[in-house]
Length: 91
Image (cartoon, rainbow, N blue to C red; front, side, top):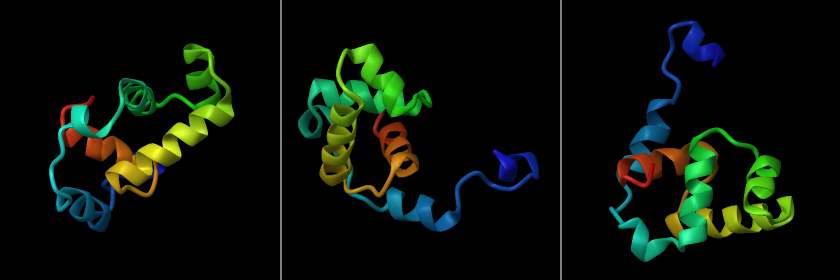
């Protein structure tokens, strides 16, 4: 947020390029419905604890889901995950 406030780009060019070069995958073939739901909540900016509360699962279970999601779509964190999801129409 600070970077955006200062007029900078919110995402560095290297991250954008790395995510954009990934092969396109349809979310229905890659992610389970629960994983897709979690990705959508991450894109809304929700923290793991809140996601867990909304889905009636533990925060630890959310973390496990996120780890699995990151592995499946080959991203390194929430920001890259949201970019991946936006490019593929998941969010």
